[in-house]
Image 1 (tube, rainbow, N blue to C red):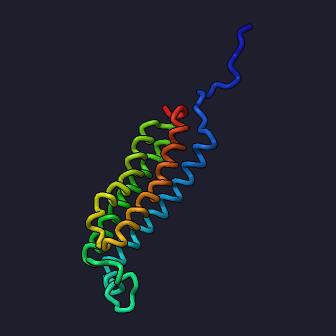
Image 2: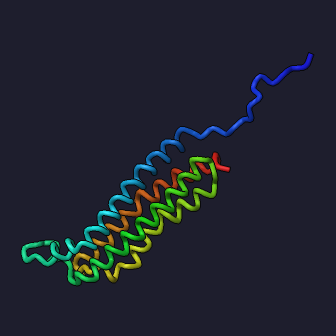
Image 3: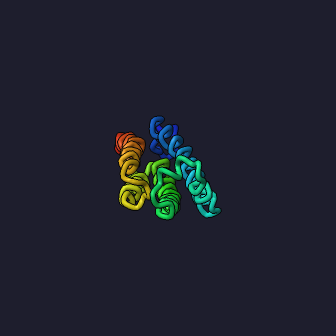
Length: 160
């Protein structure tokens, strides 16, 4: 008598729990990033930022040397943030489906915002004293993207 396969369904690769957790955390982070960027764009478009910066008693208004450049930079970084978040979302969805290409797409989406912000460093609108603090903030801003890229990289062996 022949042995029959008791499980006629095709074997599918199971997603590791760590990868599932990373993807869920990424979905949440992407949602927060998109909402933050949209709020930033709406505030800048409404002129509220400029009004705030031009108040005589505003400490932040005194820190920024060139308010027009600052507002323009905020607008650009907001748009780049939304685009990068959508690129990350595409990558995370692909990794959720265990597709290796998603990892490389995700890297592009994670690295783009800090790289754009660093490239706009000279146009931040901040004076010399606060420009170094701005750069420190950008460097610190690389910590989470690099950490997630490394953690997803650990899971590359599970992606096809």
